[in-house]
Length: 111
Length: 117
Image 1: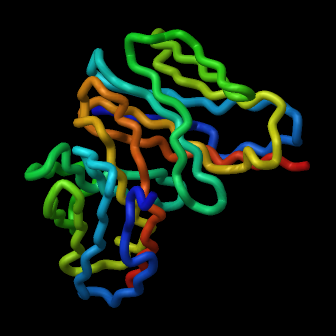
Image 2: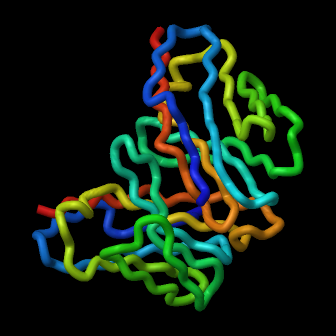
């Protein structure tokens, strides 16, 4: 059965620190997609990134970067030079037969 | 742009009462989903509809029913509410059929906070 594990329940950093959010997944399918979503204090869910299982290229978007490693079934998310506005709950998700989410990591960035 | 609209945003029920959460999307998406969010549990899939006329169980379907009324609308019904169903419910839609070749990016509604006393 598919499963997404975000072992870090809460992380607290000081502004300008780098922070990595871990995501480990399980699936029997060879074709699947991985996602990261952000849920700020306002409560809406915001799509950040999608990777498919055939594309292990890492991606960088501004201060955000993602490291996808099939060998370890991980899809980690790094925020460089964190800012207070990055404070949110971040969810990793796996799509194969349906879309399953991890339990989320609450990131607090202190000024 | 309305996107995904859920109603009601807040609801308080007594144990045993029934209610329906409504969801509508105006993006012409094929797939629609209902999730519940509980502290420490993340988002758990209740039911989904890969396309108009089809529905499938997700991770936690017990106590719920759904109806894909048309391509726009996907409702979630609690026939006999229980305190364990106290949660925030999110509806989402996606252009892609589950497992298909497209993105699978979900567009979420604002959530419906349900309390069952």
